[in-house]
Amino acid sequence: MSGKFEIFSGKNGQYYFRLKAGNGEVILSSEGYTTKASCENGVASVKKHAPADANYQRLVAKNGSPYFTLSAANHQVIGNSEMYSSPQARDKGIESVKVNAPSAVIVALT
Image (cartoon, rainbow, N blue to C red; front, top):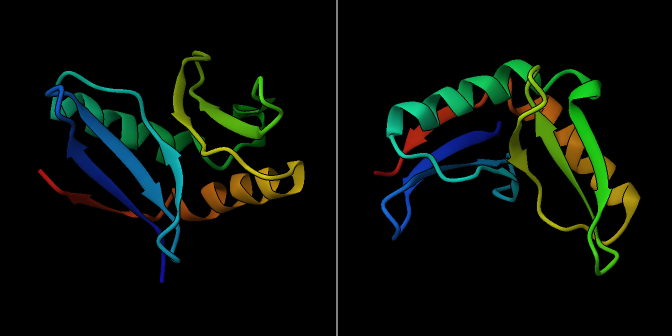
């Protein structure tokens, strides 16, 4: 089973996407977008930029948990990961985004 993007609206009226791996785990989430069209553009940007390792920033939260962000060519962050238990788990999450995002189907939940 391959990955999928889910587009949904939050209680604040903004639109968000999340990329789920084939096992249903969320591997990337977006910031809020004011329109569904701009959220769809965000998904297209993830699909385009996900394969290149240079677009990932491997980070550590204040509490010590590893995570990553995915950026577009203009260096704007287009997706954030969940927190991971180890740098190795984070790196597997990055590989999962690289594999799943380019061919993931888009499901609109709104």
